[in-house]
Length: 440
Image 1 (tube, rainbow, N blue to C red):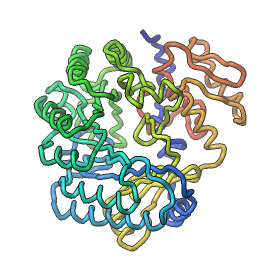
Image 2: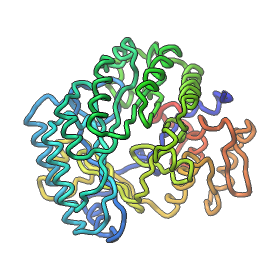
Image 3: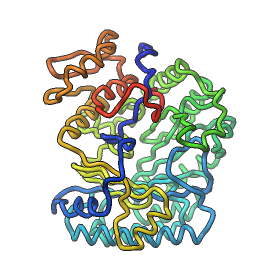
Image 4: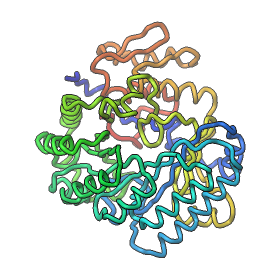
């Protein structure tokens, strides 16, 4: 289905959930940057909130998220106390400016905390930000998901839930340190549907150690039978030099580049044949889902949660390691919960890393989003326009793109190369950068 040009995919590239990427964040930002960014929020601006719960009941070996074990009640209680304090601090600084359009909980696993604690957070957010109607989305670990959690999801009106499924294959689950019986996933789906959740997302993975084409197809077939509205099918990123827990994974069993490419192609073919619309390279949605509709109408965007139909230009992150996005800056809270805890307790914003975006950064970022979300990008106004065309000449010779004046357009078969093509607009990248994973 897709032409395979391994030489065009050899360079590790970012996933581009922001530009500049988090790899470019430095420590030249802090409390004052966050305070100034909040002060500049327009009264009528649409704002999204993201709350990070950096705990899981069990730590998966493959995972690159900032998370720790939820094995001490006092640890979780202390974190939540500070999170409530941070909510109050941000809300006070906004002083009623901005309209909260969406609220997302991620992690880690937000259901590592108690259902009552989640309900208290939601109630606090709705009061502090005067956003009683803002839709809620939530990431859920199916392991141990119980009726009391489903009840609080129904009570709080959670509209969208994302389940970390990864694979239904038990042997592959064991190979990546995430054993979850099929029954756990089925129970979670049943409980969530019963709680009125109208939009489910499954996170799946290819490129796992020992994963065969047959095993991937079996997982896709089981997924299709459960009919989630959305799917994300990610390639496993093996970077043990950055994520030490991945050293427990047998690297010798990982599929090679050609096998990974074939698995990605197989997933795309199977899901689109089942009626899902392709959204970018690795997301899929039913045609009547808002994400698919955004892709079809040119409204698709990219943020730290991946492809999205969220129109907000401002995203405020709450919790340890959470990232806030403003038009002119990206600001990340302290990664370590202890450091974040201490700064919030001292009455300050916990901004520890980030970057101030120049107008040129924003033009380059718009071009990257254009490639990833719409398959087009405009190089007009970019000083390195000629260099970009030179970098992309191998893709042009392979028939993966064409130029329409200063406008770049991806051709049929270019989808798996989109991140590699987008990297040509990235002024921070070098050819030998090892901080990123396979393009496919």
